[in-house]
Length: 225
Image 1: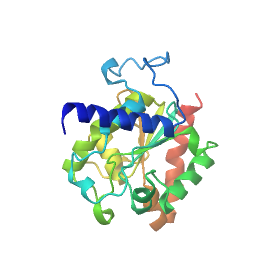
Image 2: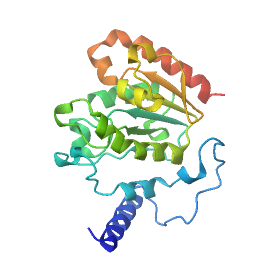
Image 3: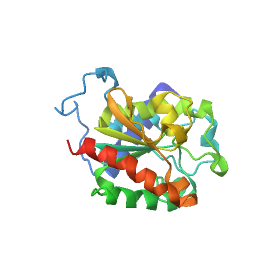
Image 4: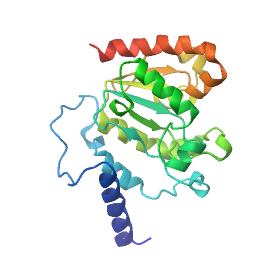
């Protein structure tokens, strides 16, 4: 793709994303919301710009079988952000994160926190569905992670809940199992990070819901300060 064609394609993606978000103008500068001191100014970018940069991504092999790229969903000014590992079957079909059975359970968890889904922001480490819902591979996560970093920098939430092993290990840069990570508050660029079990795990192991609720309550205390 030539530079001119790439610019045109990125602009097209930007305009389509802003239209989907109900925005009619392209902002010249970021709003005046105070930046966290430990988030480099160069990393701050509008979500629509990040989506346009991602474009019709072919950076890794996951694009080969996807139906839809799943960028993220929710409030771009959210205090709480959820990060999962990657899209599943339903997400790949709809282009929206966490809309299948696991997503329905996540929505119930959000509502139990006295929030609505549209109050939070939801994203994944990888933006395309791994074939057969297999685990995302290291090269795929490495390729996609810079876009998640930019999403977090743009939103600047007060707290992040990592759903499952891959989200927690990626953000916290650790190989520690999720069973040992969950319930222990970590940190990413000065933002509190709570690792907990993925909703899909809860569907298979409903007894673990109590542990997840305990983890969520810690996050609620941060949000209510």
